[in-house]
Image 1 (tube, one colour):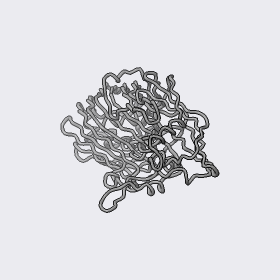
Image 2 (cartoon, helix red, strand yellow):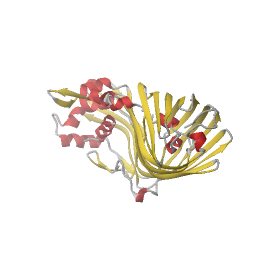
Image 3 (cartoon, one colour):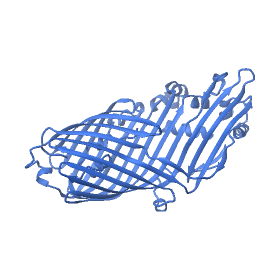
Length: 452
C-alpha cells in the first residue's frame, strides 16, 4: 500500500481538542487541567489512573462510508467522495493518566502528575482521496492539489503545579516536562498533479518534507515500516533524548455567588533530536501513460510495475537534523453562578490554537449536588462545526474514593455512525480531608452557597 493511501486511511478511521466539561468540574483535581488555578476541595488527593479521548473530523462519517448491501456492510467510495469538503481535517487526542497527587497547605495547593498523550492532526484536500480511488482521468487538463499537513506525536507529560489563593483571587501555574515517544511531522507539504490533455503525460510538482523521530523507517515507496506504537507506555521513553517544556497559567476571581476564570494551557513544544530522519522530495517529475488508479489497484498494469514507477516519481531523499513541534494551545474563559446551595449555572468560552488554525467552542452548563456523595452536570456545546453536542458529567464519592466521568457529546454514543465529534474522560481519585467542610459541602455559614 502506498504511503499516501496509508495517510488517507488514517484520516478516515479517525478538528479542536477541548474537553469543555472539565472547566466546571472543579470538585475534582482534573478540573485544574483546564485551569491550574482551580483548587480541589480536599486537602490531599491521590490521582489514580484515568483514560480520555477526543476525536473530531470533517467530511464523511462512518454512516456515509459504510452501507449495507445484501446483508453485508461494504465501503461506499462514491458516497465518501461526495461528502468530502474542499479541505478536510481530523483531530484526535488520546490520553492515559497514571499517577499523581495534590496537597493543600493553608492557601497554597501543590501537585504532581504523569500523563501519556497521543496527538493526531491531518489536513488534506478532497482531490487526494479522489485521485487514489478514481484515478486522474477526471482531472485531464487540470492541475490539482495533493499536499497534506500531517502531525502525529506521542509523549510523556510530567507536571508540577501550584495554586495560591489571595483573598478573592486565585492564581495557578503548572510546569510540564515533555518526553517524546515518537513523531511524524510535515513542515513542507506542497504537491500538485497535472495531466496533459494531448499525450496524457503526468507532471508532479512536489516540495514535500516529512520529519520523523522514532517512528518511520523508509527504504522505498513500497518498502517502509511505521514504528509508531499507539498507546505505548515504556519507562525507557520517560526521559528520552526528545524533550520539551509545557506551561499552563490560570486565574479565578471569586465574587461571592459569581466566580469567573481565565486560563491558557499547553504553551510550549518538543525538540526532537534523537532517532530523527527527514525525507524530502523536491522538483518536477513526469511520466507518460500511467493512470493513478491503475497504479494503486493493479488494474491493467502490473502492481509491482506501478509501484516501481511511483517510486521513481516520488524520489525521497533521507537526511538528518533536529526539529520542533508545538503543542495544541488552548484558552478558556469561564463564569459560574451559584443559584442555591444545590444548583450552579455558567458558561465557557474556549479555543484551540494549532497548526495556524483557531478552533473555537462555546458552552452553557448547569450542575447540581445530590446529597454529599453525588455531583451531576450537563452542558450544551457548540464546537467543531457541530451544534448537537449535549454533554453529561458525574462525580460519585464512596468514602475516600472519587469516581468521575464526563463527555461533551453523549449523543455520539448512541449515533456514532452519524457523528463527527466524540470525547470522554473517566477515572478514579482518592480524596482525604475536606477543606472547610461545613462551608464547602453543607453551605453552613456561607450565604453565597456551595461552590463545587
